[in-house]
Image (cartoon, rainbow, N blue to C red):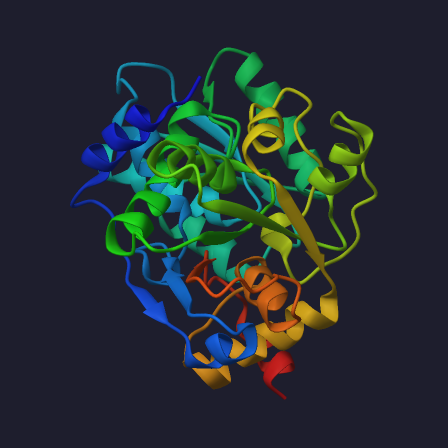
Length: 314
């Protein structure tokens, strides 16, 4: 059971190793939403995504004498774990989809991890777990891991320490590690804060799982939000956390994600990958009901290929 105390300990553990990111007002989105909208700029982290929080926390807890590490990743977690592992000299193997953005895959290689490419994310997760079960490496899930979730939850600590009047936090959902950590932190700090998840229409494991009352296999379609794409690990800890602490999940289309990515560049002069843009998409499309109180949106990562960005802007 992950608690607020674990997230506070994670914050101490990662202090000075990751960036305490700004919480910046968006005039554009504030006008659209009819309330003050604040952007939590995780795009500014050393690996350009929030994933460095959980990765740094997890690696800090690893005994270097244990076996090497192995993980699965859509890209950002692998990059973050490779970054943290390299700093401690810990060998790492990453399984990732062959169609993951080149900017993510190239960064994983550059950080010295052993990269294996797979057909898709689901295949990468299967291969990484099988590798871990062989006993020659310890598997660290990109989302279903106590230290990963606790590290991600430090994002909410920073938001609510800086702006205690924030009433809602809008969070992208892939495997659920980020929103689980944020929801645990918010519930511990102020139970009145409402955490709202956003999934891509092309990949809705939580929306469909909630409808069924359990984790179900979904038909994953291509999406700009590649970092959110894939089925849930049937053993994940995040599904129950989200069921318990996240009252609302909304879904955005590919067109809405594309418009949000373009709007972030043109209006905010920031780059956001598709997975990061889903929260912006939900606000810009009017899918978050206004209540007059400040709203925070986690801008979770900026690792998008140049050609994809060019196609969106033109």
